Image 1 (cartoon, protein in one colour):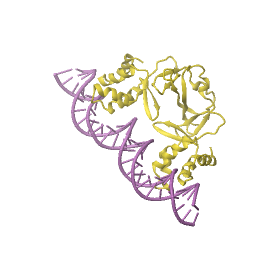
Image 2: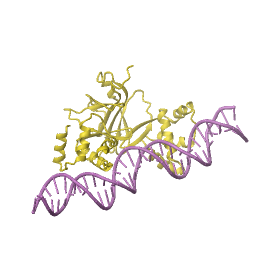
Image 3: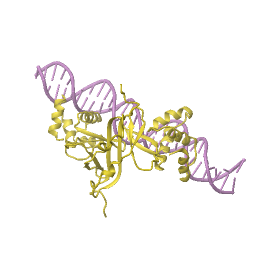
Image 4: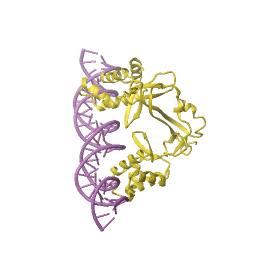
Length: 139
Length: 139
DNA sequence: TTTCTAATTCAAAATCATTACGATTTACAT
DNA sequence: ATGTAAATCGTAATGATTTTGAATTAGAAA
């Protein structure tokens, strides 16, 4: 997802263009990694000392609601990332060292078959964690 | 995992038999569901008003460390459950309504193939959420 | 452009899960 | 029975997140 598309969605849903929102979205546009509310605040406080958690969290919620951001939960923290626009559904490897993300082409749900008859499936989570080649010590 | 085996492991690792540990383990032995620290405290406070968070959390950490319990994170809370002793690795469907759990026979890691060359894989998470047949409103 | 109004922001406090601490009690090997 | 390390208690601290209420601001309408 790029910034232009993100603002299109916001406009379409009646949200205003504010500099705080621009800063937050720019941070996501510039990285591939998952970011926490604190990551954002720490950086943005430099330029906008008044930036508060309220602003961060409310906007993150808005962005997730509008599918501009994806959210996942890792070690007790909510992590956010620009929503993937890949043609088809996929999952991620997440590097615990640098936070970088790699797409995994498969989705286990396709392989469930009739494992869950009469179950109402609402969601699923599949993530792989470890070290990417750059962070893996090959010595 | 049954209580006898759990105590075997604790003994082997030099942990003492305390009534608090017994109560906590009994709660896990009696249910199939994932429980939170609060679930445990709320119940155990009835019989042991003095029961404190310290006791709960320290013991949960110990049990997870010793593979007596499994841990997962759902909606911002850590959830615990008796460790599965099934012959082979598997994953779970978790009912968001009643908390009951159903084993899923597959593990997506087997299907990764060479998707992650030179990546150091440390962990993975695969869970399916929804409503079990009992909780699904079939009207 | 000026005005209006709802949306947004700020700053601080509340909440919730989790962790930590010093004092006391307990399990269990000797 | 006793000594000692381990475990527990009661409570306070921490850290992430959410909420609140007053002040500010963006964007639409006149």
